[in-house]
Image (cartoon, rainbow, N blue to C red; front, side, top):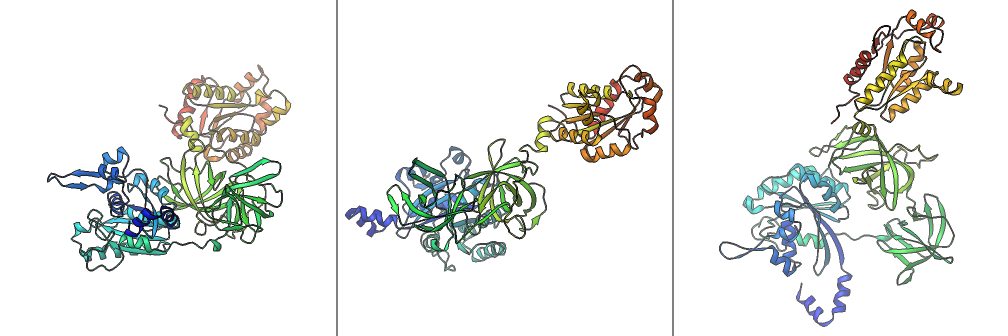
Length: 624
């Protein structure tokens, strides 16, 4: 704090507070690999800028063997017990300080790859990213990962601090080697500016004041950069975006829409459009706790009253009619995967976009990024800390701008509907169709929130269709029920579809049409069950239709080849069809998966053979 500020505090505290409120606010985040010195840099910044409280300073101070006081600057920000025990940052730590020129909010983020998701959280609102690189180790993969994420999150300015220069003898050649290496990588990123500075966070070299230990360096210090980097926004140039958080209706004469302005400016009388409905009106009043305003701008929280009674609910967005965003169900987004459970494209997720929750399906995983080369690699899923491009389809239209244009309306988080955990952070790039046109038409059919992978994990089995083919009275139904019993005894779930079980003619028609039976069996298999079909399908073409309807990759055919004479004898004892007339046109399976003869064989042995074949296919998994 300068002498002028201290004097102002003593003489006019209110003037000092007004001056403080009017200072420009800079949010910055420190990123980089583990043990590169991020927490030490922030501790040094806070200490040298006199932003550390006495109790914090005392807690971070220790006595050396020589009796001198030494400050562990990393302890100023590492507040968790686990952080101090392990000597690493785990959670995001926020610290605040100010200088005569600006106010600052610092996010100290973890460097370990396990906590990349925490780093992404801390960087999501920053104006500047400071990345630290250990002068001894050079540019590491985690350094590249964090720089890429910072660029992906739309942070405009990057300050690259080559730290621990004291351990590299303050060598200019080493500094140049590292900056050249990083410059080749950073040239592929979307930063507006990249600045390089050699520092020693521990010794305070080039942190607040220039150091004579690096006479070959004539650039800004860390503090000079933070105080001078341009961050001013032109609110009038930004499109007005107002996600509605709440509808206020205290009485019949008042209806207001409360929320926080995400971007832009709104004035009384402005023409607005409510999305996604497209209804229009004008702003009648802008209300706050302190009274009405003539205009409001981001990030103010206000209540808007309109001239017309139009239907607007939480999750809708109010925009100025002269600058409309995109409205679509289909869009593509870059996603940072935050969960130890991999992305499962087969299930649907919730996304929270502004103030709206929408169920969303993953239509495609386009690629993931190789963080060494920034190449786009083909993939079918995303693992923890992967960064990739997804094509998504929401079940209701969402209102958005590309993330590069608006960091609020272009961002969303992905939520697992089963665990309610946040599993991904997304940045919208464009609409899903190449033209960028609005997607119209009926809402997409909802997709199950449970994927095939989850069903297999829960049931320890793959959904499948087992089709039993044979002459009337050959024993197909009896074998199907024997297999069902054996599977159940082993802890698996199966269901028999048997034409003789039909309670009436209408039901019998449903279970004697092979294609309809196959469709019903497919539905069973989709839920993870094993459908055991013992129905009349005399022609080979009928059974091939059933295979196609059910899905050939999970269709299993059993030929019960009991001879005609045995079948005829059995048929006279029951309600089977006439065996002789059926045998004339009956076509045996060309390539069955299993063939069994039930003329004299007990059911147990063929049932076990079928179950063994299902295990060999991998459709039955070992149970704990």
